[in-house]
Length: 385
Image: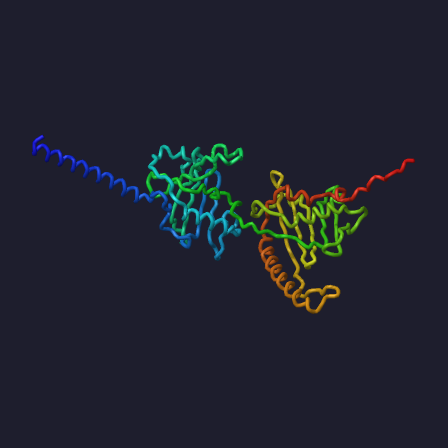
């Protein structure tokens, strides 16, 4: 090879390297512009404080969560207070979630990854649309959450983990072209059901003194109705009227059921089953009166409406033979408990304007008939000689 040929060969190598480097830099630039750097945040420019509205929509439902009067509310439930912890948890995850994979996927393949945006016509392959907006209603980011990615976990013994456990999510972000990102969290809380976002605090009846069930006006009303009472908080329950001896376990079951009620959804302007409602009246040792109406709903659930009236006592009744040195401590505890009770009652009164859907299994212990609450006499023992 002569000198001239060598120089031409070197020039060709330089040109090829330059073209390769240009293409490489072009790919790197496009990669950076897509925000797809592995290990980086999906939404690095956004701040939690910028978000004042969250909308989720899938093929079957939609929910809009927005700040109003400094409180997050569920628009599809008439502005019922939303669960701030759940909302903030999802927003923080969306802003902090890391990219673990990124690649360009043509629109024709989006359905296979459940990345089709929901529309009027329900389509197979539809994902969950998530929109984050500011206080003025401007959409800050719009994305479609698609197929959940699974990770094999041989140590997980659960049957539903045989194909893997949820480990990530495919996401299509508006403005990022056909780049599909796989992020490091399955984002399973991102559901488009209004009931899933309602604030979970509910009323609670405790320290019950008397409890009465008044059934509807049907032919079996008298047999279904009852009233029980006790003289002291830890005293023995008994029937307030009528014959028969109250079974202790029945009374305890009914009493305890009131402290653990929870609801699954809120109903707006609903009159379901009001003609078949039963009414509970509970008077407490805190001078509060709760009135609760229960009516059959769908799928074995019940519609519940309640009200609370009364004012907790302002002074403490001294204990028998109470020592002077204990009075100050007991007075302080009483004042603190009363303050907490007043705050709870205030919240309950605010919540009493709504109608709630309560699971039937929670209501069942409350609907015992009188005959089910009567203690049966033990069979007499006969001595045979």
